[in-house]
Image: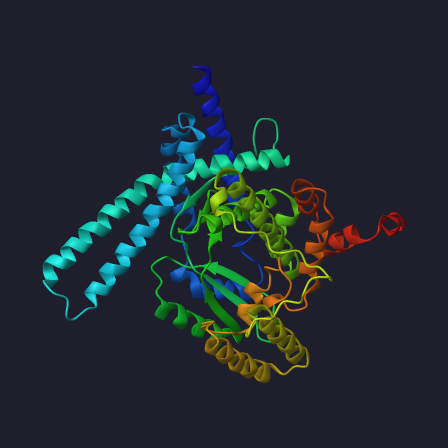
Length: 426
């Protein structure tokens, strides 16, 4: 009876928490000004139903929790279960691709029977993936929780918020920026059944009616609660995204996350924080539980080491140069010239194997916020480098997260980076 009451109390706390997180989530928060409302009205027929998805996800999580499977598995069994899931996803994707190729093959022998056999095989693998998914989620939730607890981020007997995620198809996001500057003014998630033709039509309608820059982008994770994570065959990527989205949930209960959408600087602080910690958390999960999948650490930079031969086409360097020149053109009021330049640069990226569908102000407004590495779409934005500097100075991941989570503005970041003597004189 005591175990039952403890479990019931834990789930009551989680249910209360989910409503708090839904209220405070920043990434898709409704913005009050008129332009955002007009964008929302244009996108409303395509808008993703967050409430319905969250309710269904919580019902699934409640049902899965009754299994309590992970309490009876040994560590080696836990790891084997996750690896079996990754393998099943890989096999399912291969079978799905084979079936699609067969449908498009005009010379397919014994067409009817072959398609039927491939369809049965695909369905069998889909059923296996669906059966393994909730168990794999619970194992990874427990492993990520242990890493975060050992970081010192626990409260009493657990984490706040607990690690909860669902592997599911993710909605795309409509990103909107003004044309005369790179600044995200809308981020609206779209229904899963929105195809590419509808996305392109929506981009054009928003741009033509509101004289803005728009772009629909795919995403790999979303800080709902439970968080949404795209299915993948990469365990390294999966553990990183689980950590990244948990950080967003954590920040949503603190000043930095509550102010996510108030300025481009605060959004960059949020996303760069989640990216830095997501990578660290993901690597630690791999190191402890799946060491054979742990990528090698990048070699440390040293003045004594031989200089590395630069790649023939360095994406991050080229994209940084592009962003910086676009910023200069827009600052000078040359909007049409900047847009022509971005299209010309897009063709250069395309010719070098980077198949970017559209390169515009909205592209940079979205990708520029993820500044956990120098260069790239962030250009010379100092906010990302400031967050990275704070990360490098912090004594631990927990100390870094607690310090930055309490910040209410970018000025708090600059203050934290001042030498101790200067901070005392402020």
